[in-house]
Structures are given as structure tokens and as C-alpha cells.
Length: 312
Image (tube, rainbow, N blue to C red; front, side, top):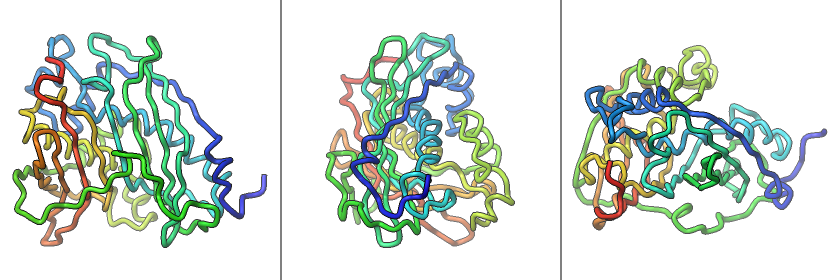
């Protein structure tokens, strides 16, 4: 098949992908630790604890596997597509219940479907918005919904939408407040964290572990997986405004603005502003060798009311 010369948006929207995956207790424990969860918190690391649960951004993990299928298909439907020009730019995650994984089940079978819902012209490429829905295969119940927006550089935008189609929280923009943050939490990343997250999430992209691959991609060192950076920020929001109660998480929307170099032990700082009882705005900054830069921006976590979350 000859590569396309323009973007056929209706044809792209007609495509879909389905993938079945299985996750175990061991992977959930590894995931919680990879986000900086405490090894002494039995709710995060001991499967027999009645409060045992996956941190809520575990709901983004099924995206990683199915996005590999979408990424491979981009060679067929995007002009001049090159794999290394595709980066994770924005993300939305919504949990339909209090937790991303059914409680009390040691092995979880999931079915995840994906479809492109928008392709938007940008100055140097296009933004490809992919809707991802994950169900419990056993019951058919929707567990979570994600929208993964990937920025594809150097792709001609002929045929793409000129502006992004508004879709509520999925496309909302949350400007960072100018006032002093209400809360700030820091976290020091490590090479071990980056390696653990690869194993826990199944994202085995060499960019996140191999210095030579990172160098070839234009980075000074391997970069932390974007969904890991997001997970750390959400954990900070829950600690700051929900007393660590993961069941109060409802949704998150954020822009991934830059890489974190866990291989260099960079420290990240999550700055947070509580707009009301259920909405927390945030951004994440790296302060490394006096080179302060924003890595997550326009972030917003929506919390469930105190009486709406499930007890652990």
C-alpha cells in the first residue's frame, strides 16, 4: 500500500483497534511502588490487606499496549509518518468507579478498544486524539476511559481539522493560577524507578532505559515514561487534598510539556491549587542544576465528594 499524501479524516475515524490484556496482583504492587508509593503501606503492597488497591492512574496502563497498535497503523493513514516523530502530548483519564481494577480478583482480564476521534492541524504537524475504553472482560462493565493525544511532528496537515473539536473535560484547558500554590510536594526520581515502571506498565520502549536510544532520539539521557510522570503528580494531589484516599479520584486532564530524566535522578515538584472542594489544578516542574523547567502543565484533577468514594 502506498503511503497517503493527505489525511482522510472520515476513513481514519472509521478504524478501531481491540486488545485483550491480563494484569496480576504482582503487577499492581510493582506499579504502586513505581509511582513512589510506600513499601510500608499495606494498602498498596499487600494483596491480602482489605484496603489493597491499584493507584488510580493504573487506568492509563492499558493505553500503552493498544497505542502500540495505533502507532503502527499511523504509517498507513498519516502522510510522511516517522515513528520517532510521535510523542505523547496530552492525556485524559476518567474512572467510572472508585478504582481502575476490580477489587478482590487476583487476575484481571481486560478488553480495551481504541479509535481516533480527531486529527487537528498544528504549526509543525498534527495532534492525533485517540479515545480508549477499557472494560472488565468478565462483566463487560466499563472500568475507565482515556484519551491519548499524540503530537506527530513533520506530518502535512491537509485534511485535518483546523481546530480541536470540544469534548468537555477531555479537551478543556486549565490555565495555571498566578497565585502562590496552595500545596507543593517534591519527589526525587531514580534510574531504578524508571526501570520498575517499565516492568510494571509493560512499556518496554528502549527510550526509557537505554542511553544510546535516548541519544539517537535527541535526548541527553533516557526519559521517564509520561504516564509515570502523570501518576506521580496524581499521587501528590491525592496526598495533598484527599488524605491519600485513592477512591476519591474521578478524572485527570494534563498536557505533557517536557521530559523527566530519571536516569539523572532529577527531582520533580508538583505545585497545586484547590479551586473548589472537588477540582485541583496542578503543574509539575523539574529543578535540576538550576535549570527549572515545566514537564506537566494545565493539569486538573477532579475529585469525588468525600461521601462518594468507596471505602478501602
